[in-house]
Image (cartoon, rainbow, N blue to C red):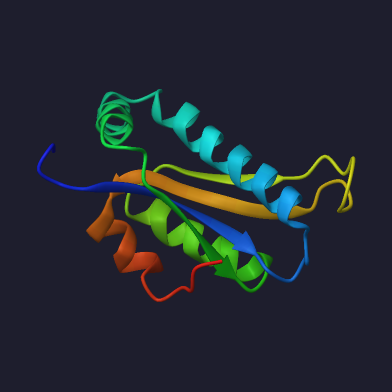
Length: 122
């Protein structure tokens, strides 16, 4: 596994027009949630260790809305990747229960790019 580069992708909804601070907080929630889920399986735990040791590459990409977010997350799940979906508590910017973003990985860059490679960077 060490010969493969790893990254994590955060998929951020652009239709919510969240502030930069809100986006940063939601992206952080998505990243941490995926890492915590990854620690529950030996294969994914090893990916997290290698990803951590090589700088924890991550990228935030734009998705248009909740439907598009779930589409990409489902594709990643179908490929056996660890994913997360973040639902906001509604304390600051959006209504309680609003799905704001999700994450995929960490996993092998080429495998993630097969799913999200055409998305634009936020």
